[in-house]
Image 1: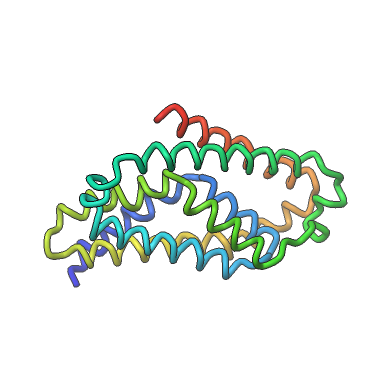
Image 2 (image 1 turned 60 degrees about the vertical axis):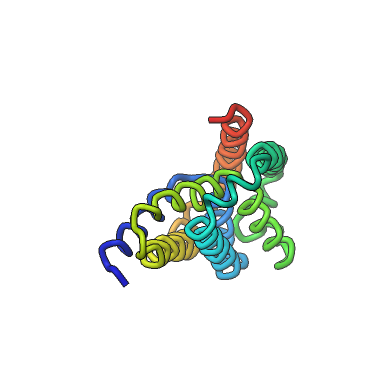
Length: 202
């Protein structure tokens, strides 16, 4: 394995997922609630890994064979994010007892995992970052694509597990209902901003 190319993949992978987005906001929220954190982090990291492998090995073939995929994913993803944003805003206006960190209504493992996978696989930006962008960059390292892909996948695992389990340090702040309201409102507007960008083609 080429270590310098591995590090390039690691840094590229981290730089693409550090910005707050639908998936990251969900991981942060689960970490703050201490609810199915390991499963959520693992699902996000494994999904990224699968998409990175897909991009590094098949990006050119996919874009040539499925020219309709981009608009379909764009509109489906925007619709989902608009709905999720409305759901978060509704949560922000619930009673303080429901929003309190210790009393927040728990979601089942199946519901949580389904939401996590939907936020991951229905988000066209995930495909843009992992399949298209990382797939394109990997072509600069012929013969060392595996090193690049491994670095990028390592970045995903490091980020998601750090975000999910590091959120516990913020938990004292979110004991206050007002903090939960602010978080839910920020998540809602983040989802809507991403949806707007998808619909505008940005």
